[in-house]
Length: 270
Ligand SMILES: Nc1ncnc2c1ncn2[C@@H]1O[C@H](COP(=O)(O)OP(=O)(O)OP(=O)(O)O)[C@@H](O)[C@H]1O
Image 1 (cartoon, helix red, strand yellow):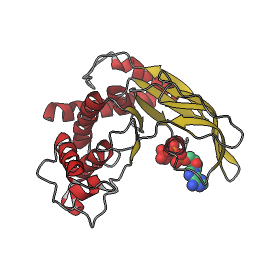
Image 2: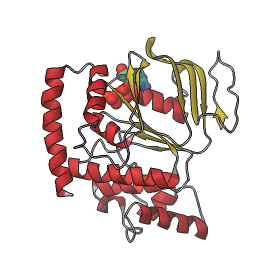
Image 3: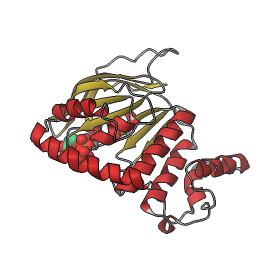
């Protein structure tokens, strides 16, 4: 567990019951403009949490702060996060000059590491593609490889910034199933940044909405898994989230219906 106090903050205590991530008074600004405004948040160990918010609301800024990737950003507050953190982005960030297995193993050597890498690739459905080059993979396969690379480190915390944002709808649905499966097997704490309300509701046990620099809504999704886009009981959560995002009912209704029809069609075709 690493505490990263910013200049005016004390160090957080660490104990076994402590949340995986603890933020107190986290503030981040760019050019004098406050993007995160005094955010308090606990992410319990082993929870899959989704983070929604308008474009520019600060989701990536929050994720980068938790990942410790924002040293150049002005800010304050107290932040505690685990030592083993993996980050997955919208693009796979595979090195094109390394084969898939070598990408997964980056930074680890030896026979045992190679075995773990192979096992991770098998877990994401890429057994047999170890020696492929990244440019031989589809977008979905590349994201699978990125997930394998993050898993091989057995992270305590997985930070995922729109990991499925660039994928087509059918691949996205398959990746939702995969992410949930991997989470159930490994149980890291996950913070999933997404624009997609349905993705958040189907995958996460808790959904946060970032609004005006703060957590505007903190919603527990109390439905068993696996969840279906067709589940009418998820509709109520969807409405609350859309309202928190400021989407009007009319607009939401039309968009929802379109999305719902599309997703149901894709689900049927799986
Ligand atoms: N390095 C930076 N320098 C200056 N401004 C930045 C920087 N990074 C982010 N910002 C600004 O901070 C605000 C929040 O950005 P951030 O990327 O966190 O939003 P987001 O919610 O992740 O957006 P999106 O959903 O579009 O990815 C935006 O107005 C953005 O322009």
